Length: 173
Image (cartoon, helix red, strand yellow):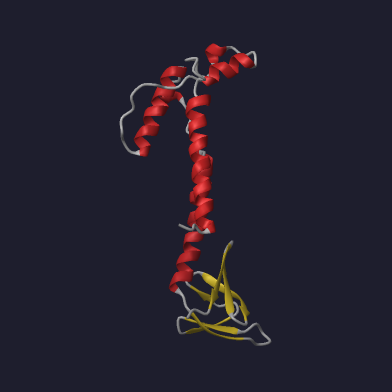
Protein backbone atom coordinates (compact mmCIF):
# COMPACT_ATOMS: atom_id res chain seq x y z
CA UNK A 1 0.00 0.00 0.00
CA UNK A 2 1.39 3.38 -1.00
CA UNK A 3 0.68 6.29 1.35
CA UNK A 4 0.32 9.86 0.18
CA UNK A 5 2.49 12.54 1.70
CA UNK A 6 -0.39 14.00 3.75
CA UNK A 7 -1.18 10.56 5.15
CA UNK A 8 2.47 10.07 6.18
CA UNK A 9 2.50 13.45 7.92
CA UNK A 10 -0.74 12.60 9.74
CA UNK A 11 0.71 9.29 10.95
CA UNK A 12 3.89 10.99 12.19
CA UNK A 13 1.85 13.58 14.10
CA UNK A 14 -0.27 10.84 15.64
CA UNK A 15 2.81 8.89 16.76
CA UNK A 16 4.40 12.00 18.29
CA UNK A 17 1.14 12.78 20.16
CA UNK A 18 0.92 9.24 21.54
CA UNK A 19 4.57 9.39 22.65
CA UNK A 20 4.00 12.76 24.33
CA UNK A 21 0.99 11.36 26.18
CA UNK A 22 2.97 8.33 27.31
CA UNK A 23 5.84 10.50 28.57
CA UNK A 24 3.40 12.76 30.40
CA UNK A 25 1.57 9.90 32.10
CA UNK A 26 4.52 7.65 32.88
CA UNK A 27 7.47 9.97 33.48
CA UNK A 28 6.15 13.38 34.46
CA UNK A 29 3.23 12.29 36.64
CA UNK A 30 5.12 11.33 39.79
CA UNK A 31 8.20 9.53 38.53
CA UNK A 32 7.17 6.39 40.40
CA UNK A 33 7.87 8.01 43.79
CA UNK A 34 4.26 8.57 44.74
CA UNK A 35 5.03 12.26 45.30
CA UNK A 36 3.32 14.72 42.97
CA UNK A 37 5.59 16.38 40.43
CA UNK A 38 4.69 19.83 41.81
CA UNK A 39 6.10 18.85 45.22
CA UNK A 40 9.26 17.48 43.60
CA UNK A 41 9.71 20.75 41.70
CA UNK A 42 9.12 22.77 44.86
CA UNK A 43 11.85 20.83 46.67
CA UNK A 44 14.23 21.20 43.74
CA UNK A 45 13.93 24.98 43.83
CA UNK A 46 14.11 25.28 47.61
CA UNK A 47 10.46 26.13 48.15
CA UNK A 48 8.22 24.71 50.84
CA UNK A 49 6.80 21.47 49.34
CA UNK A 50 3.74 21.63 51.60
CA UNK A 51 2.63 24.78 49.72
CA UNK A 52 2.97 23.11 46.31
CA UNK A 53 -0.19 22.59 44.32
CA UNK A 54 -1.95 19.38 45.16
CA UNK A 55 -4.36 17.74 42.77
CA UNK A 56 -7.99 17.56 43.80
CA UNK A 57 -8.89 13.90 43.93
CA UNK A 58 -12.50 14.12 45.05
CA UNK A 59 -15.00 12.56 42.69
CA UNK A 60 -16.59 15.15 40.46
CA UNK A 61 -20.03 14.79 38.98
CA UNK A 62 -20.24 14.19 35.26
CA UNK A 63 -22.14 17.29 34.22
CA UNK A 64 -21.97 20.16 31.81
CA UNK A 65 -18.86 22.36 31.60
CA UNK A 66 -20.44 25.12 33.72
CA UNK A 67 -21.31 22.72 36.54
CA UNK A 68 -17.81 21.25 36.58
CA UNK A 69 -16.28 24.73 36.78
CA UNK A 70 -18.63 25.61 39.62
CA UNK A 71 -17.59 22.47 41.53
CA UNK A 72 -13.92 23.23 40.99
CA UNK A 73 -14.34 26.82 42.14
CA UNK A 74 -16.26 25.67 45.24
CA UNK A 75 -13.49 23.15 46.07
CA UNK A 76 -10.82 25.82 45.59
CA UNK A 77 -12.68 28.22 47.88
CA UNK A 78 -12.93 25.54 50.57
CA UNK A 79 -9.25 24.56 50.39
CA UNK A 80 -8.04 28.18 50.35
CA UNK A 81 -10.51 29.39 52.99
CA UNK A 82 -12.13 31.95 50.69
CA UNK A 83 -15.68 33.13 51.35
CA UNK A 84 -17.35 33.26 47.90
CA UNK A 85 -19.94 35.74 49.18
CA UNK A 86 -17.19 38.27 49.98
CA UNK A 87 -15.41 38.11 46.62
CA UNK A 88 -15.79 40.86 44.04
CA UNK A 89 -16.96 40.04 40.53
CA UNK A 90 -13.99 41.06 38.40
CA UNK A 91 -16.12 41.05 35.26
CA UNK A 92 -18.88 43.38 36.47
CA UNK A 93 -18.65 46.94 35.21
CA UNK A 94 -18.58 49.62 37.93
CA UNK A 95 -21.92 51.29 38.59
CA UNK A 96 -20.49 54.65 37.53
CA UNK A 97 -19.86 53.21 34.07
CA UNK A 98 -23.38 51.83 33.83
CA UNK A 99 -24.97 55.17 34.69
CA UNK A 100 -22.87 56.96 32.09
CA UNK A 101 -23.64 54.26 29.58
CA UNK A 102 -27.39 54.54 30.12
CA UNK A 103 -27.20 58.35 29.78
CA UNK A 104 -25.23 57.96 26.55
CA UNK A 105 -27.79 55.44 25.31
CA UNK A 106 -30.62 57.91 26.03
CA UNK A 107 -28.81 60.55 23.98
CA UNK A 108 -28.30 58.27 21.02
CA UNK A 109 -31.73 56.64 21.17
CA UNK A 110 -33.43 59.68 19.63
CA UNK A 111 -30.73 59.87 16.91
CA UNK A 112 -31.19 56.18 16.12
CA UNK A 113 -34.98 56.58 16.07
CA UNK A 114 -34.63 59.58 13.73
CA UNK A 115 -32.37 57.62 11.37
CA UNK A 116 -34.74 54.64 11.34
CA UNK A 117 -37.92 56.66 10.72
CA UNK A 118 -36.65 59.09 8.10
CA UNK A 119 -35.66 58.30 4.51
CA UNK A 120 -33.57 60.56 2.31
CA UNK A 121 -34.78 60.42 -1.30
CA UNK A 122 -32.99 63.34 -2.98
CA UNK A 123 -30.56 66.20 -2.48
CA UNK A 124 -29.99 69.38 -4.45
CA UNK A 125 -26.81 71.37 -3.90
CA UNK A 126 -27.22 75.14 -4.35
CA UNK A 127 -25.18 78.23 -3.51
CA UNK A 128 -27.25 78.83 -0.36
CA UNK A 129 -26.63 75.33 1.06
CA UNK A 130 -29.06 73.13 -0.80
CA UNK A 131 -32.20 71.15 -0.14
CA UNK A 132 -32.94 67.59 0.84
CA UNK A 133 -36.11 65.56 0.41
CA UNK A 134 -36.86 63.51 3.52
CA UNK A 135 -40.03 61.43 3.80
CA UNK A 136 -41.44 63.27 0.73
CA UNK A 137 -40.89 66.64 2.45
CA UNK A 138 -38.49 69.17 0.85
CA UNK A 139 -36.23 70.80 3.46
CA UNK A 140 -33.77 73.67 3.03
CA UNK A 141 -30.68 74.08 5.21
CA UNK A 142 -31.95 75.42 8.55
CA UNK A 143 -35.37 73.72 8.34
CA UNK A 144 -36.40 71.39 11.14
CA UNK A 145 -38.14 68.01 11.11
CA UNK A 146 -39.06 66.06 14.27
CA UNK A 147 -36.66 68.06 16.45
CA UNK A 148 -33.66 67.76 14.10
CA UNK A 149 -32.41 70.71 12.04
CA UNK A 150 -30.92 70.21 8.56
CA UNK A 151 -27.40 71.65 8.85
CA UNK A 152 -25.59 70.48 5.73
CA UNK A 153 -26.38 68.93 2.37
CA UNK A 154 -23.71 66.76 0.77
CA UNK A 155 -23.70 65.12 -2.69
CA UNK A 156 -25.01 61.80 -1.32
CA UNK A 157 -26.29 62.63 2.17
CA UNK A 158 -27.86 65.20 4.49
CA UNK A 159 -26.67 66.05 8.01
CA UNK A 160 -29.19 66.80 10.78
CA UNK A 161 -28.41 68.07 14.30
CA UNK A 162 -30.35 68.25 17.54
CA UNK A 163 -28.29 69.64 20.40
CA UNK A 164 -25.13 67.49 20.63
CA UNK A 165 -26.61 64.71 18.49
CA UNK A 166 -25.77 64.53 14.81
CA UNK A 167 -27.36 62.21 12.25
CA UNK A 168 -26.32 61.79 8.65
CA UNK A 169 -28.98 60.34 6.39
CA UNK A 170 -27.78 58.67 3.20
CA UNK A 171 -29.62 57.26 0.25
CA UNK A 172 -31.01 53.83 1.05
CA UNK A 173 -31.67 51.20 -1.59
